[in-house]
Amino acid sequence: MTAVSEIRVRPATLIDVVVMAEIEVVAFSDPWPPSAFRDLLSAPHARITVAVDALDLAVGYCVVLQAADEAEIANIAVAQTRREQGIAGRLLDVAIEETSISGVSTVYLEVRLSNASARALYLSRGFRQVGRRAAYYRFPTEDALVFRRDQRAMQ
Image (cartoon, rainbow, N blue to C red):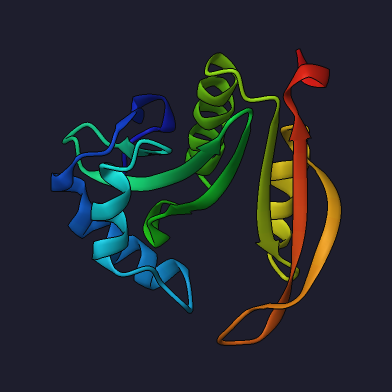
């Protein structure tokens, strides 16, 4: 097992799509297809980063969508065997830093009500719950909590 300090975060490429899709299928009950990742790699409003190990193999990823001065963390996931090692935190920190540099003032995300570990991570990075979407998730149906981070207040 690679130490988290040996994990680096870099922009995703087409080569990473297969592994991101494999992580996605395990991480989410309603996964995105590989084509969604391929399409987003060339979308000007999207940024996908991957956390990679010493062999440059993706062990996690983060998808950020940006419109004007707002951004959304659309997806963040870590390989099942690499969870609870700080990788999601690294990916989130990079996303926050990159959005701040690109002029984003507010970052949003949704998280399953039952995902206590993700909620704790987001709260630790300055996100605050601002809403709830009833029955937002499928398989199983579950509410989403909407979180927001005011970048200006965090500087």
